[in-house]
Length: 256
Ligand SMILES: C[S@@+](CC[C@H](N)C(=O)[O-])C[C@H]1O[C@@H](n2cnc3c(N)ncnc32)[C@H](O)[C@@H]1O
Image (tube, rainbow, N blue to C red; front, side):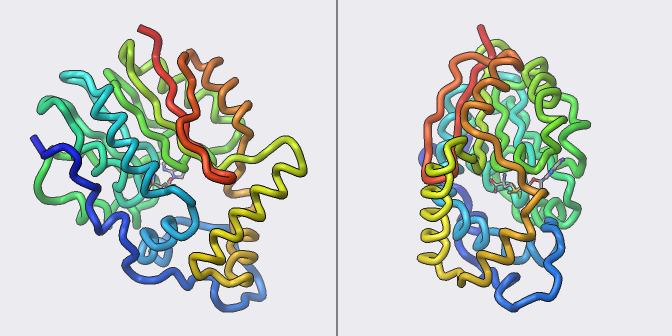
């Protein structure tokens, strides 16, 4: 069993190659894709784009350590390079748990396979659409910045299938970019997020081009919409435990 309080693998959360993908002006900004170019710079990109990313990853590990049940499965949905998988692996309290990490980007899965090799509990790494994943005996499920990329029409059914596959007392961690229903609050939090990105070294051009690439690809919900959808899917004790500007993470429980 790995030691507790070990931070996630540095390769997942430390900068690596710098993200310069949108640094040069483009005539036509294509919709964002998790391709090889993104995989190369992903740890730097997500750390400099999501305020509080490292905290949310590490605390998802802590939550997993608290709610993992003996002989159960722990899922990391939209695992990218496996930062959350590793955080959960570091905190696993039971040797007979199985880690399942899923992503539908072949480039992400190929790199994750390399990064997750080595010591620690084995990981069942799957290249598939999480809408096709079968959930069973799940004590912990992490959706870290993934639901926002799923067609909004498919979100309720996905959450309901996750809830159905969870053990009583299980925990779902849902981290997302959020939007605010109030126009003033939305503007304020978006401005603060852009200030964060500028402070992290992104230029106004990079911010504008990335934003245009993500339009209609990343569709954020309000916190109230998340809470209502989680409740409709059968979750209880729905608690936002982290928020920074327009990013938030919630925990929700499967009733005992
Ligand atoms: C922002 S990244 C997630 C970051 C990651 N969870 C972390 O904490 O480092 C979103 C990931 O979700 C994956 N993804 C998007 N839609 C998906 C789907 N329908 N099925 C599986 N993976 C999906 C993308 O390929 C991408 O790797």
